[in-house]
Image (cartoon, rainbow, N blue to C red; front, side, top):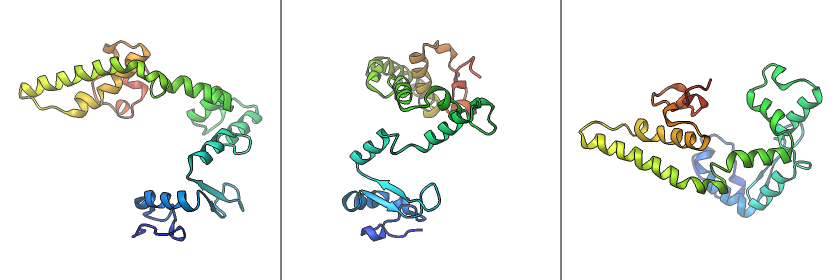
Length: 200
């Protein structure tokens, strides 16, 4: 384990055992002295290098230029498309990759899909749900207070942390509240669709 935080650029090794304990100090050094750090021989293909970027402007430039800096997933998507096979017919291809090939195989569709999916939750559109979220919070807190006043034990996860995201998602998606399951299951633990009755 890396015992001490790095004090100079020469001591920065983001992938050394225990290095994660000192990432903040390491990134501060990289940001100031080597905003683009080359990792010789660590690239995807033999003989190629990898790079660590620590400045927003550099990161933004790279992620927005798919032609010059193609994401590794886009290379896989292009390979699948070139094969002419249906993604769902390729052995050992998970659902995430298959959905990317089908729904968002290029930068334009990727951005449109991401905006459509994230806008109601964390994008500019999420503020329109503030009142709805506050009402669910108030109702759940009122339920916990009622139990506490009655001398009953209160399980914060069961009474608040688990049902709040379920209720918010149900409201955004238009599901009736009675379709959310209060019981704890492996599916609800994973935050999956199966938290709602009728999903498989």
